[in-house]
Image (cartoon, rainbow, N blue to C red; front, side, top):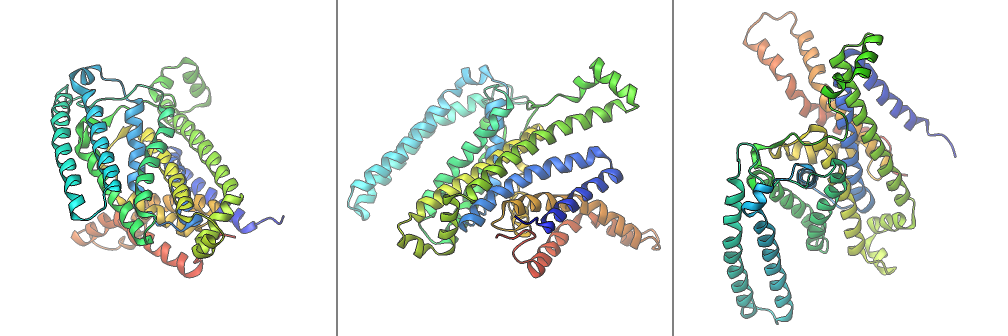
Length: 433
């Protein structure tokens, strides 16, 4: 098998970019960029499985990532016995009751002949069930949110190790993806885009407004870590001795070591997922998915269940996005629902997939790391460029406005990168074979 020097050169260029930024800006900054880039690469890998394997257009990436972040709160945050004693147990009971009413309505609807006459009993069941649901749900929520609202005010979590929340994040995202896919995959492709966009907005709205679940916009802070804390390293005699012997600053060294631990952990997860994605792509299942993507009519004529296979790959891609969302919340140590916006978690991920190479897992990883690097580094590079352009200008409102606008160069830069990629490499930097 011949060596693809182009791909090796692209990844080498990426490494050089991070090294140069490390020498110029400091390793603390660059390691933080690298860690978020690894997480973004996992998200891009999940979208690539949905779009590159099967041609499924997911515009709700932000919702699946948010569910991954929620999993960290539900699994790893401290258990709050006061909230559960006040009425926390009534909340899951009410939710199960509501789900049962919906399921009952669905079963009855299938048994009725249809039409307006059949719709009336279904409507009556749903309305009555809604009021009974609120009868249990609202008092329980009020009781939970009244428990030390300045500090908690939510049901808390299970207090388990944070690494367990990563697969749980994938499961939560898979559940939401299954609901969307069962509803929209049998329809035209544009309905899937609308459904994923809608479910993402619903998820974000729930996270922002349901304080009993995740404190809403008050945020959940102090989430546990899978790596040591900087203060623990700084109080370790062995670490202090090591930094002293090598002449390192204690605070800087502890921060770099913690970030390196995250880097190793995230890189290991990315490599495992990339290996599994490559194996699936080159398997008979992967060849079948690409055959369905290229010609659904011919695949159905050969006896393939197109809707079921689309459901499979859509859920699998959502699992990867959910895992990445849990990893990001773990890295930040807090859940901030207001920070989930489509620009960062949907548009930018799609740019990563398109620029890297749709249908190629290595291309998705390259695009994830490269686009995130530019997304972060464009601001300091833009500030340097504007400082150089305005060096001869007198101080005044115009110069101050230009300097303050350096951060806004991110959006036009992403647009330029996307246009250049579509013009000169329409199939991506590492195209599908």
